[in-house]
Length: 318
Ligand code: ASP
Image (cartoon, rainbow, N blue to C red):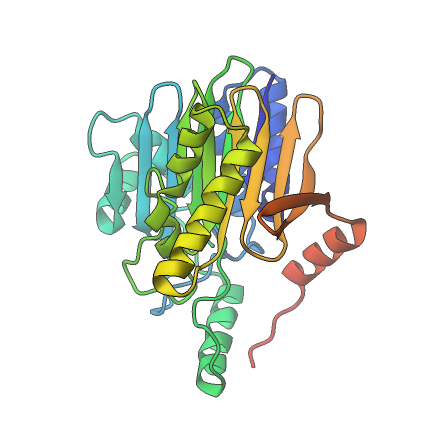
């Protein structure tokens, strides 16, 4: 049995490629790297890789991580600038014995030495988003950080190896040097091939408070189905945050276990995700949390059409 699950509709093309790798007998490490690179390279996805939205100084600083659930190899980069494939750099770092997590100039120096492709990741379109947001913030009380998403994936290959990967530009208008949950082991991702893997998207500062990806894998290890594990972890953290702090940020989680069973939970209205298995081609679902239970529905043709249209629609500077 092989399979992949990923956060957001934007993962669809990547999961399609990744599934092909698995179908041809490829390993979970290669499949996830190819799948995430596909998302990083598509300039119209404005929260990952090329075309990602910048920090408050109009620089695109990217976070990414890779974990191999069989060897427990972990590699991550944070606040890295001007490199095309953060996920590949993270995977490369996972092979090192030490120095597995590198930030900013340190990560860039490593990537340069290892021959990774340099690229200016700030697109003209991202600049327009930046200038428009500056204007909106001045005009109305709009939240500066809205407009962020991470691609997070869990991948099981037919030899029973499970990997997890993340890649993101983090919060739009974040402070220079801000690091979210995505490159933080246990928060943005966790995987154990004996059990399963999980990955997160949403407000990193809140996701970290529950080490929520680790928590889901722990619940699966205790015997919970991935769906149950995701719901317990998301509902519990959401309630704890509201009780202690009066509010909870966005929390959306995906998981897959070593049998290819999967689960998804969210505390937001309409979280989209993509699932592919040996039996099923990639499908986009949208989930809603109704009184603690997450109900998944296939995205309609209309929703899918509209998604691409809005992503690629011409953008003008206001
Ligand atoms: N979790 C990411 C971060 O806080 C953003 C997101 O997934 O929307 O950097």
